[in-house]
Amino acid sequence: MTLTKRDIVVRISEETGLIQTQVFDVVQKTLDQIAESLAKGDKVELRNFGVFDVKIRKARVGRNPNRPETDVPIPARAMVKFKAGKEMRAEVLKLSPKK
Image 1: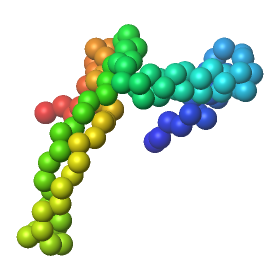
Image 2: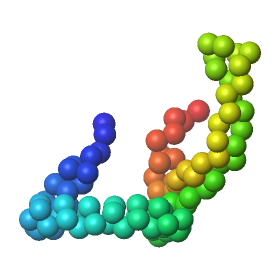
Image 3: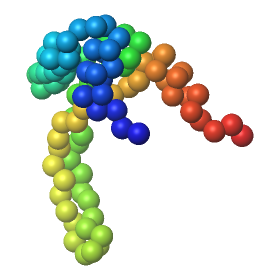
């Protein structure tokens, strides 16, 4: 199952009694602020949830699977990395199959 922004808005609205448009505005502004901070290269830390950080991947040489003899240069680029917080990691680990 996939959790969408709309699902989040509906759940928060039902739990708090706030109007969905108000909740949507708050959720959207939160996501906009996170994206804006990351675009500036800042780190975003949400306690007990996780940390978003911008990392620069260095340039490298790739291979085209259809023509392996040809090198394909891949330029350096910025990427968003996410590291789950301690509590989230613990909850997700509960999904691991038992051996």
